[in-house]
Length: 109
Image (cartoon, rainbow, N blue to C red; front, top):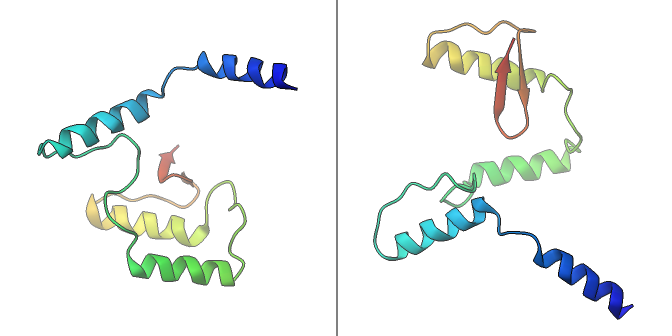
């Protein structure tokens, strides 16, 4: 068994550090030195989750809203995205012409 573990450890040593994690570490280092940096490395906000978001997550779990959404996205979310874009950049997204994916990616066809 120890040979298997040793072989696994040797293989793991072949992996290089993630460039994303390396950049995030560099940003933290520079921030500790007093530099003001807006880090976009990890895709993680630099603030705690707002209370209303926490409550909405609790409500979604209680209502069993925990499964994968339809491929095209949640209809109410798609309508909200279309409304948002119509107000913020004066464009119209028509239902069925765009899709909303996890990780806040929106594509249009």
